[in-house]
Image (cartoon, rainbow, N blue to C red; front, top):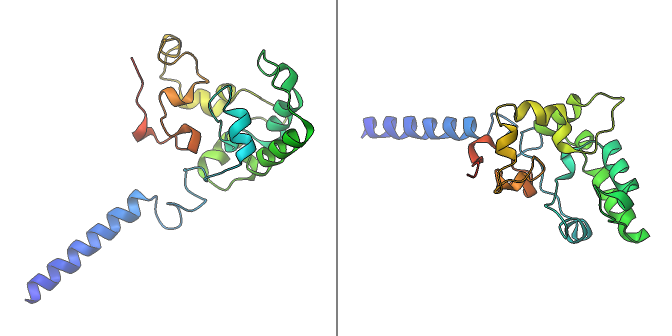
Length: 174
């Protein structure tokens, strides 16, 4: 009986340690300091921004970049994506409040730190963080019909719209 109890304690300890390691360690798993971006939700952002392209998580760019994106919606990557004032202001506020420089998770911090303070990049795919993370992906791979371009995150990262860019979940389509 005593050996069974010791075995049970050992199994419980191993399981707990494994769970702790899988979650990123003390205070890192589902909390804001992990690499997973926080769940964000704004109905206006979802409806307006996803009507033309995938939803880009606000924590992928710093506030200054989102401000520039929102200021140029009349020429939004070759399209007129202008919004009425109320929608514009609501989305701009949401993006600013949830931007990379306002987040405490590792991935957002690294994205933000990779961008020089004097730079205001509006293409996520041009951030030094993105470039470094995708250095093994060839230009031809991005040009595949199944992907299209580096901006089509959901082609390879199925959880991209939720801020999940876990490398273990990456599947590059043929």
